[in-house]
Length: 124
Image (cartoon, rainbow, N blue to C red; front, side, top):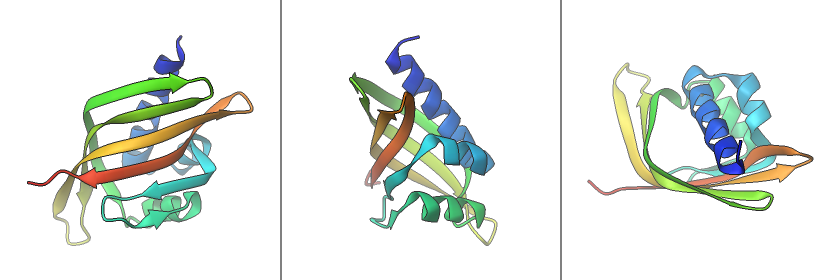
């Protein structure tokens, strides 16, 4: 398996963990020093991001990546593309975040973890 295939597999696991609110998987996949910048410019750490998933501040119901590019540079991988995240609101309605993203995976101690995420909304 190539490093690009490893990252693709990890990305699939991460999006699945987001939708399923799988805290164990998120803890494994996200770096302790994660910087997670949402499309509204709010920044979370690993701890605050996972707390948001657990507390359903972000209740993901679907995640699609119609476009994705993975580039590996030694022990770093850059993933860019187009993402559509569907979230459930507290009132039961849903909304979709349609954006471009950039994330960074780092290989430390023989293990890949996502260390940064940044997304920007695509104007309607």
